Length: 168
Image (cartoon, helix red, strand yellow):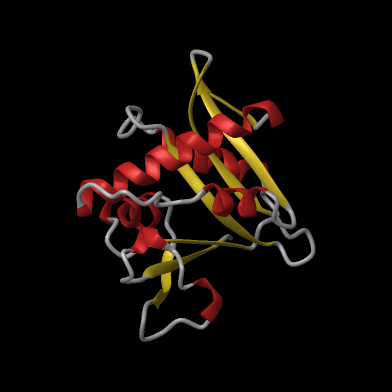
């Protein structure tokens, strides 16, 4: 597998692949949904965030997944905004391979942060058991310090787990 920066001309397909992957995870749990679980504007917000870097993983010349991270070179507290594995490529080690490459690319990182919806046991397993993140907060209708982000459809209105990984 080859891990490399996303090319600008690949962005439109990257967005579609992210949307399909997140849609599938949501619909596998809740059933068919007419809403787009992760709107293009949310992906572009991550892509255009301060310090953002976007990557893809290729296998045999085909993109099988990717990620967007936000790197803060001053604090070395970095964020994993999006990590996806293309539909049909799951359970083959792609997600973990992407994560390993991200860690290798940013060895100066002191803390990694990310989040995932409460219902997505597969993602929770991935971050906690495979990547060694720890749950640090459960955002929900009773506890939501960032009041401006109540519009996320992908948590079915039930909340998100926030994770951190302290690097040695």
